[in-house]
Image 1 (cartoon, one colour):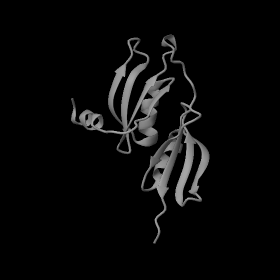
Image 2 (cartoon, one colour):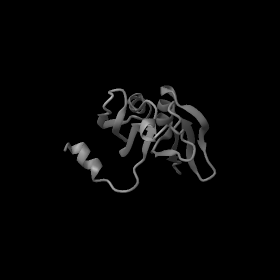
Image 3 (tube, one colour):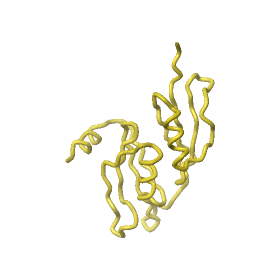
Length: 137
């Protein structure tokens, strides 16, 4: 087991596992949009889809795969969850994600709770939020 895989495997807690149509392209998109590092990729037997992919984004793991409707796992767009990135400086993360092709849902702004926050939707219909504490002098 590689050091990267071992360190990710040792993590506890809830790890997002998303299913999208076009997981190979989505993994590459997440590299461009969110600076993801790919830890492992397991193609499906058809060679066109991913059975499993493990990424690391902002030092946290995220897993994804294609949907497999022939096995009862068809695509359902994200509508009841948001993947939230908590970062020190939201602007460079925001700019990179928008430049890569994320749609702005809620502009990046200081919110009533005091953090800078905005929401995006990626081309795979997954909702993302970028959150950074506002530094007080």
